[in-house]
Image 1 (tube, chains in turn red, blue):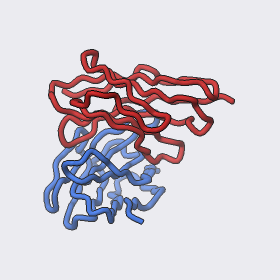
Image 2: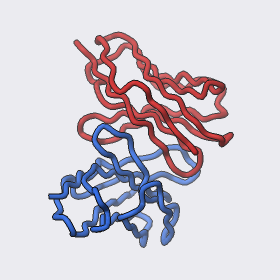
Image 3: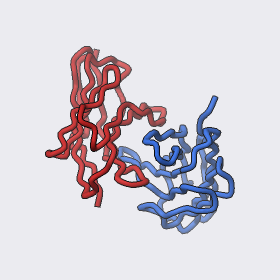
Image 4: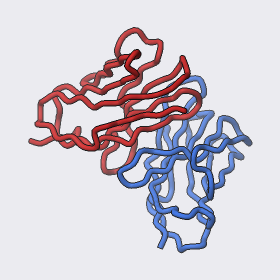
Length: 112
Length: 112
């Protein structure tokens, strides 16, 4: 069975600091994709970054980077220079086949 | 602009009544998905469809039904058999073979 685990229910970070959100996954499929989404209080799901299981390099998108460690089955999200607008729920997700499987999420709060 | 439209944004239902949530996309995406989100939790897959007139059960399909008569539409009916229907419902779509998912803005259903 596929499973995503996010062990940090909540995190508090000072503005401008970097933050790492943890994500571990479990799958027996050799081919899969890993995603991070941001969900503000409005409820929409905002796509942040994607990493394919065969990608050799870690994905980066602006201030977001994905620290992909395949042997450890981890896909941590790193946000550099955090901003007040980064306060939201963050979900790690995996697509082993046709469907996305989500973790429980981490609530990130950026303090001024 | 292309996107996914979910309506209504808020929905109130009396116990024992069926209710249908609308999801329409103009992205020409093949696959469509319905997810349920409970407070402080991740998203769980209810149903998904990869082509017109075909759909598959997700992890929590009991008490729900769907139809896919048109490529752009994937309505979800919450039946009276659903024991605890109060939740936030998100619709998503993607082109089969691509990794990008597009989400709607969600419908918040409350049973009164």
